[in-house]
Image (cartoon, rainbow, N blue to C red; front, side):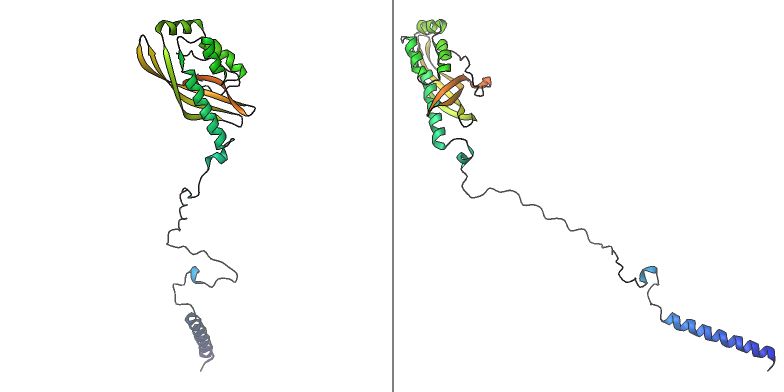
Length: 222
């Protein structure tokens, strides 16, 4: 063999060896698509895998339901059940008395009856109202006789020393002009004087009276 043939033979042998090595390497490569995602991950690395499932919704909060335990509303009020009942009864008795009068009765006697229910401050205001000359003369001219009744409709305001009731007053009236029934709603303010209740104000319920500390002028009886 010539020198040139020997060189070609050596080169050919080297190429065969390289191709063989490449073939062995390729047989060791993973059979999947060969993308970057198939490469081994470095130690300690984390991956986020997308999921086709919808996120799980939080369960709805249960609706509030009434407890079966007994509910004592009086435990949330600034006075006891007995105190409130006594005040309501007092407001009803006063309103019934306010609607009870007769044309032949001395106005001062009528005023004194009402005075027994009221505070000292309010008694003067009330007396001026029910004994006003115009009211007295109108009742005498028509010979008005009124019998009153009352019932508490609601509590408008309450605190530890006073309460305002809305009281429905009814007057059964007999007069020369005829027989009729009159109904009116009053805001009656009671305050505690010592151990007793006293009426401190009387106003038409729709006037917005909210238990003012100072008594106001009232409407005339009858």
